[in-house]
Image (cartoon, rainbow, N blue to C red):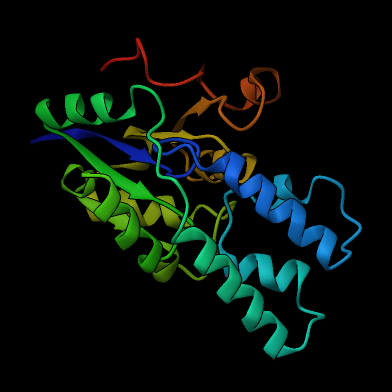
Length: 206
């Protein structure tokens, strides 16, 4: 296995195409709880559920917060798991080339178990960093630095694949090279924050 570089992947909007489903969910939640925040779905992308709850729903009674968390978990366990075009092929190419890989996601272990049952991608990753392993979620760099430590690769030798503003900020704050996918935000809005923008992984190779 090559020890000099590592590829670190976000999950939603990078490997699986779930962001449009999340958009609908969070838009409806924002309306239900009358948050008064336009495009709330954009603000919650890439961060952990605990961060979302503490930032936007801390005013709710504990039982209502727990009810909302249950609604979200049930929703996640029913989502369609559609791969981003070319993602599975790119993961397979990196694996054949013995590039170290990590999955760095704001999702929790329960959601990952569901995804791994739906898509055969677990064997590609040498480490998993989920919401269960970090206290501060993206945009804090802790999750990406933990993945680099797991893989024994220096941060500057890690390539991060991200789609959300929070995720891109986390990768940059970790001192890593970030490649942005324009699956969630426009090319123009992320171009100055990443070293390269790609629409998906078709035609993209090692």
